[in-house]
Length: 167
Image (tube, rainbow, N blue to C red; front, side, top):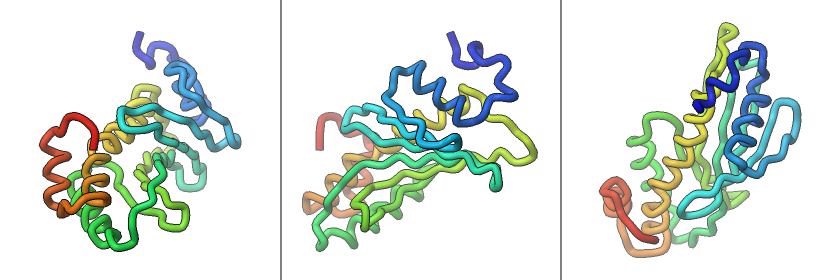
C-alpha cells in the first residue's frame, strides 16, 4: 500500500506528525524532540544516518539534515572541501557540507511549502530516501579522498561510476 493511501486526510496533518507516521511505517528508531522537530536513525549500507526534520512555520519550510560522524585528518581537509564542491555540482536537490566543530558530514535539504501548501507522505518519504541515497552514493568518494591518496576527481568518478563493495 502506498503511503499516500494511508493519509487521505493529510491536509490538516502537521508536517512533523506526518514524518513520525512515516518513521513508524518504516520501523525507524525516532525521537520527537519538539512539536516542530523529529530525529531518527536510518540504516544504510555504509552506516546508520542520523536524520533530523524540522518545521519552520515562519519560513514555511520542512528542513532535513542527514549526518554521520567523521574525523578526517587535518591535512586532507582541502581535498575534502574540493570533493564536496564536486559532489554538490552533481546533486540536483540538497547539498553536502562539513561541520568541523561537531565532526559531522552533513546533507541538507529544505522543502518549501509556502502559501499553505501541504507535503504529502510520498513526497516526504522520497525526501528522506533521497537524502540517504545521496549519502550512500557519495560515502565512498568522501572516504577515498579522506583516507587514501585519491584526488577529489578520482574519488567522485569512483562514486558516480557505481563502485561496489566497501571503501
